[in-house]
Length: 346
Image (cartoon, rainbow, N blue to C red):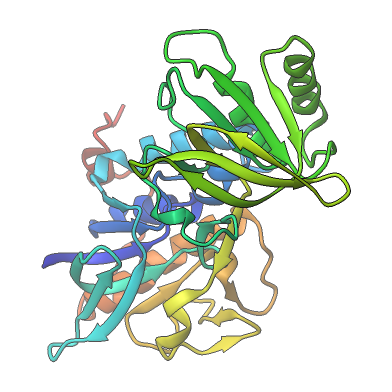
């Protein structure tokens, strides 16, 4: 049982900035996310695409934004619990909230802030029965880590930016390079940035990257249970056997509202209703920010989520400390905030 002030559900930009805003009010946070790394949908799908509407930052990539948000929140030492979903929420006799995750982690929190975008993003999967029971060394969803497939024959399934960038990364010369890399997509047309498509076609032309057009319909395993081939339908109902040692599925993310829908939270068209002054839901102690919420004038912008995080932090503080007047302090002048941030007052 982990006791904490708050549990923030979602480690995307909204959740990361929420940690910072809570920290300014000296409220601790544990962060839970279904994805294996902070950053949410931005990092999973568009890590290197430019963003132009962050105040004071004319241009940055999604990766740069997430890195900066992590550095900004670092003085408050948030604890991250990644690769797990929140699947249980209940009220304890003392009014606190009991939060349980899919891996068995249990929190006792005074407040919960849902910053999970439009739900808990999960990797889109190939509809092949039994595929997810393969050894973890044979199957990954999303961008493979460097050197994970050293000396092996790898198939990258997908036609979006994520898949093409994975294929490019795997075919970069260097230590830990796969023996062979094949890009598998239903047709020779990709939904990706033009420059990325051009780079992939150049790799195909010079022989570093193979391409197969088709849909996987099944798979084969060796006697020891490891993946050894895909069955692929292509052309006019033709079928082929595609040998491989490992498979990287890069089909993007699927948002799923999941258990949040069963918590008694008032919703409207799959969005959470909140008080726009505090961002508390109708369930006492449960707050929500970001793309998941709705209120008059709501706009789905990162900028809006940052504003919501600031107001939600004061809403949480009022719930945690009902007998105290929550003072608004400015990071430019407050010596206390300078101490918390590890900054000098000069």
